[in-house]
Length: 429
Ligand code: GLU
Image (tube, rainbow, N blue to C red; front, top):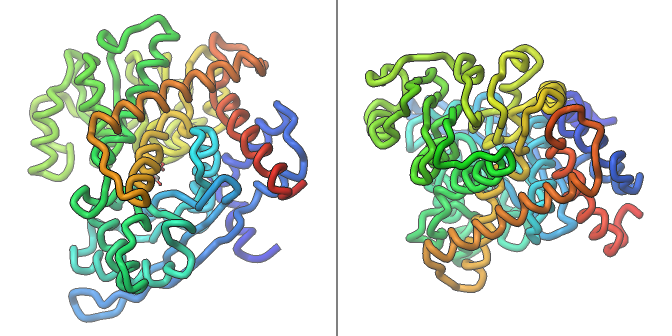
């Protein structure tokens, strides 16, 4: 085993993803060779990125792009800028993209990238230089029909605009389809910026329905107030839900009567973080996870619901806006204790679904209206929920709780599509 394989396999998030893969594969009897092939990513790219900082000194950052599987189509997945980024985490997130894209019936494989840094510690000029150099390093491996990056934690539409520009400069012509999640003015799709949050809310709505509740009467707590959490709050509020608690990395706020989301967005716009918001009680991120609400929606990082805090969770529903927020141990404990979990590869799929719409518009020179995008997204999210729910009925698990293990069902449905495609292509058979 090479050094880097070992580094990947030892990562806790990668181990969790492998655990879920093996569990689902065994549950529905996926071919052994297919399982073997999926255990390690197809290609892991590691680059060092020198950046001349504002003080004129050169600092070198670690960057990664892991291409997990492309049986179903070009590699697809976001780019993360965060101090915790490492090859193992990126590989785990790339594998999750493979399973997410397969589950959502997209003609796409799975990838993920990242740079180990704290974006709030760099100036805009430094971030631009870093992004451009990172894109140059990746340019032999990415492209509209090879691998299509998108935003993730710590990156945004501006990052994508720099990537698009650098890649196009190197190609000698403009290639808008090389990234998704870019500004609408340069080929982005209407409805992309709110897509992950909106998709989370469609899955929230369906999950509440099976618990005989209506979103217009539901109370929710949202961890994370970035690209996913903020839009989940806005969209859930528009559908009548009461957002009683919200947090970011600085801490959280709670008001049992419901928070004024617009006011909170304005406060964060002016002060960058939630900390100090005067119109609600301050709470910690741990307090938020333990609130008695109809739904808990973790929209930040992985591993936040784990063996240490699983017994304090009081919400009967968890909708995973983040990738990997619940560890396998905590997930199994909660499902066995009557908690319904809408898993990440289903619940946060709205982002990559609209990324796919954006890519289709780019390569077909099309422009869809926001209504078209939202309607199509709703169809995909509702039908994916149904697919997972029915799969859970068709392949019953041994869960002792009130609800089926939807993560097992989602992974199962995803693996079944991948297995068929791998068989047809003569891969790993
Ligand atoms: N970063 C998002 C995710 O984890 C979106 C990926 C994409 O649009 O390619 O699903």
